[in-house]
Image (tube, rainbow, N blue to C red):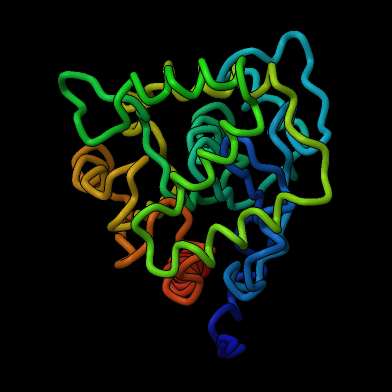
Length: 264
């Protein structure tokens, strides 16, 4: 694995104050980023945050929706940074850019989408019945439901078995997520819809997708290009829902190229 040339991020120390806020996905925790090669982040200083109720982070009674989860992350984040969000974390990162635009220098959105469930005018998304099955499974078998979700994230990916092993290992060593936070997170995924707000995001944005993602289809890239014409989209060939783990070189190159443009 080759490290990037020093010149790749010589101008990035000033980008977002040199900080990269990192938000994980549903059922994960901030330790998931430890499984990624450090050069993915283009020389920025990583600031991984736990979502409410994840990784041992407490869930406050008022933290019950996308807005309050976003505010919790803003309260823990540096005054200015580039924000990177994976899946559910991407939805929250995008909301942070709307709620506090002066604090978000740029967005890197990994297999995220402004709307996670299907609608008559938004078919490249997860069927709502799939999300309902996860909700039902949480009550009967929380551990088994999380395990099935992990498997779904890597389905179809190149070297899916190894990526699943990496995911499982990265989740060891921290408290399991609060069951109430898991349920609320599914509500956020079901109810969140930022399609109409995307044109209001003024900072540069990079959206990364995987060709084999069954949770956020790569076809979402075409919709993003219509809703955010100034944004950059890229589809990682052979990747599913975790391209930063399954395809770190391609993902890292895309992120570094984006950050280079921010720093120029």
